[in-house]
Amino acid sequence: MPVYYVDTSALVKRYHVEPGSQRVDQLFGDPTATFLAANIALTEITSALDRKVQESLLTRDALNTVLAAIARDLLEDFWLIEIERAHILRSQELILRHHLRALDALHLSVLLSLQDLAPVLVSADQKLLEAAKQERYAVLDPTS
Image: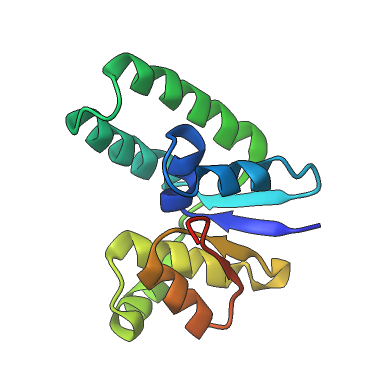
């Protein structure tokens, strides 16, 4: 049974057609798969999709529909991992080691805390993928 930790760069592909969307849909079509995400995913994906509205790539009505679907899917289909103090403290180390952006470091910190599940990181963020590989985690880039 595959276990996937899905970051926002991959999750957005499930709700907005762009390079990598087909691969993400394939992953979600696997009934044996388990999906994990940090609880910051809803905030991050709202921001990412709002940018698409600002860029006229998505309408406001479509955004509202998609956000309702995302909230439902995250609650029904994902194990949402709460960001804890330990994640925040570890993310500081990860920023300095891998030169990640703050939220990417939090995602990596959460991923590292799940080592017993051996999740595969699903992300389209090349810097985060490289950092996870350096931490000896399997990665999947849906755009490649």
